[in-house]
Image (cartoon, rainbow, N blue to C red; front, side):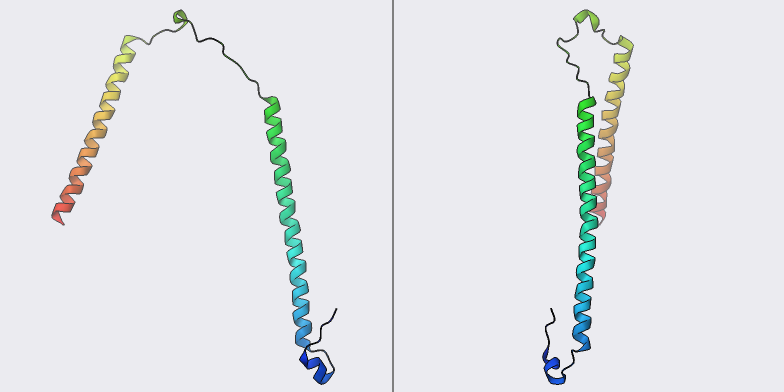
Length: 115
């Protein structure tokens, strides 16, 4: 449907600008429809694949139920040397961490005092 503007009544010929504007809007609507179709297709494809993947993993998983904890005779404590070694490493790492924190604090305080 064509809606004439003021220049149509004066000259009797539809203006070129109104034709260009209407053509521009029609092309824009076609472009939006095409983009909406593509985006909608991607969303639909993605949701279908995700739902299939979730259903597939749920069907293929095996569930193991452990009823009882292991018996005391089945649990072996670590050797004494291993305990000493890891305890020493743990103490060393905490001491090293404390040393780094203290040295960092000293550097920050000295920078504040000097500035």
